[in-house]
Length: 230
Image 1 (cartoon, rainbow, N blue to C red):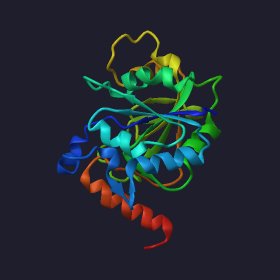
Image 2 (image 1 turned 60 degrees about the vertical axis):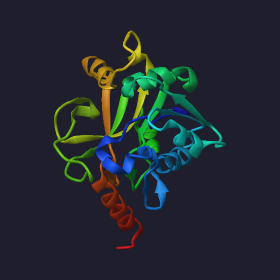
Image 3 (image 1 turned 45 degrees about the horizontal axis):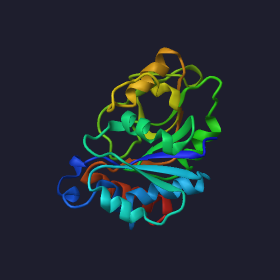
């Protein structure tokens, strides 16, 4: 399994409104813990030895929060924000791996560790990327339809009711020959779809998008349910 993780923490958090006026979204607390720490607990439990965190908006606060922690390196994006694909490409020299986990820092999980779930399903001989998904009917804090349809053997196509959770394993060669500095990982996924090498696995626990203020209460309720407190 990969031993390197790209943790995305550079966004502006505009959907959070006033909550991100003076702090970056990864430092918003949910259930008594900063969002970024929820993600780092998952990484540690999965045995990840090297984590790169990208920063942009109010980067100094994230850097101070992470100061002194072993195995964590900062990839700061000065100037224009680079989006997910560009952020990952910028961080490749720090990740030092051709296959990596990526994880968004604005979600909360219950149930099986998403990274170990991905590692168990990873088949590099037939996959260029493996995305962890959840059905839109049980995704919390999420509105709208799904992102992908899951076909035979887990092969993905666009559309359908499966929501991307923000966790994946990806071969970084999918970024080769993309010359733009800023671009979405959707570019890489489209390459994998065209080759029949984009796959998905379903998360068996709970997942909540905490990209907007209402997601905080929903995530805390989900955590309380999982702990048997309600």
